[in-house]
Image (cartoon, rainbow, N blue to C red; front, side, top):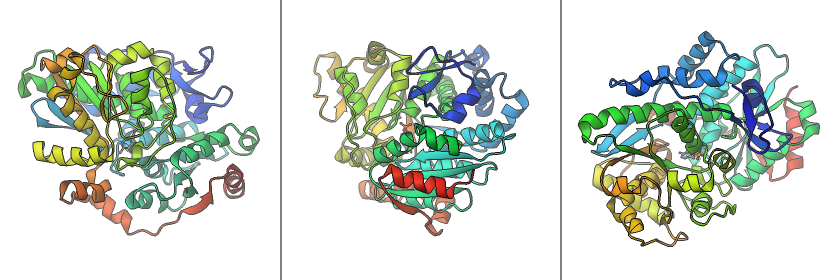
Length: 472
Ligand SMILES: *Cc1c(COP(=O)(O)O)cnc(C)c1O
């Protein structure tokens, strides 16, 4: 596969370079494939349940062809995915896609574990250590730390905003020993992201240290996230034969979004033939992208803290990839967009439990509520010309191509549940009046000592620390 760049379409590079460099330092752009080859039709037409790992192999092959041998790619996939995603029906036309069955209980394990193994593969013949720098608003740090922990030839430095992630998330990323170190930055997630971006564009630093990113800007994290869109849309298409007997359902995937990596992966799966009709971009009060879809103007905002804090992103990086793949008009036909404030998030958790018996985490709750509202009047209102104020919570005023399918009850929803509710137990208990069950792998990490280093929001401080502490 030939890769190009979101800012300069004349750039031509290979998978290895795109993975190791993370972003293109010369242009500041993000790498994207030049094509999205359609997956073998046999997967789409089979009526039995597909195999997640077979789909993962078939989907990653075109992007790694000529650079990773089939047997090595298969080993990477088998090793990365001892767990898979689960499709859970909660009413006849609503499927929750549980993405939290990996080691850190959030969807980011899917991307991070593939990326870590691909990077180790590309680094296997190098003498110098490859240093991964990652900014996190919550779950990225733990997923990346866990995925790279004790992987040879690599180390990881995690930057996270002090006081802006949950105590459990903090434990999950600050307690690693060995090749994974956390830095607690006195600033916001956007500050952390800026520090990382500055390091990547610092040519002097890059002469001293081999750096790579692990944020959702890295293409090797985005590609594997497309696997579960393909898998779940095929599963749901098959299930509709008996769950609700809707013939040729419009499958709408609702994605709780922050940096928009997950949603971009959904777009990739759709281009590769996944039977997905449309998407809903669901956010918290950081509604930069819904505003863009409503007004046509992209205006980055400083991030604000919410209960769904892994989505507290005011200037999502992958906006750039979305606009490289689709025009604004195309986005408006393909996407609905929806956002909730903190009150709405609490109500959504409560409402979902009351209506369906299912406990969601604060991120998945927004997605569920978006789907529930859309099919219970919000889309009908839109079609009748009652457009809400985009500055208020709810659906934005664009009418996607599939709006009628929703009001005519020809649509089914796949609601992405991106984290185990136990990761956000304080919020969930407050909203639902019930404590979500705590998986063992979470209670174990709570008992470990915190090893994070506190740092000012200063690039000079970061650079000094990196050059003093990372070995060549
Ligand atoms: C990271 C994260 C998100 C947002 O994903 P993006 O790819 O950044 O849009 C949503 N929910 C949870 C639980 C997350 O950890």
